[in-house]
Length: 169
Image 1 (cartoon, helix red, strand yellow):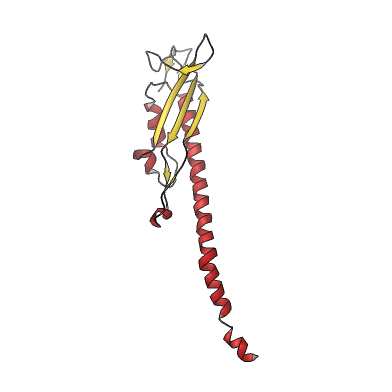
Image 2 (image 1 turned 180 degrees about the vertical axis):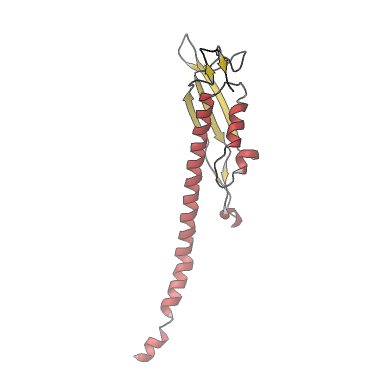
């Protein structure tokens, strides 16, 4: 009986190493990957809301360049941050007004930008084209494309003070 215990002493160690390599290590990396993906998801969603909030409180510009410049300068700390600043991610800003006859929301147009006489009703900011790529791409797996994020907000002050007739970009 004593000889049998001696021959089986390393069996538990071998079983642990096999289960660790086959189950626990991949499960740990899967948890890390999923956590990081959810963190990025939340960051991009919040980033889109932040851009819409900025657009609602600042001057209307047809191109939306003031909003996109603000967003590119204030990308949150995250993986693949450069995709937002000079990569494939597209930031689109659209303004809408209400049609007085039908009450429908239509694309906003005006001849003058950044004036108290020309303020849209709603702003919509969307972020498209982000691909989450971390250590899994080094394993030969493709990056994970995130869906498009979009936020709409009613215009607040639009950077304008109607009493003084001045707008700040």
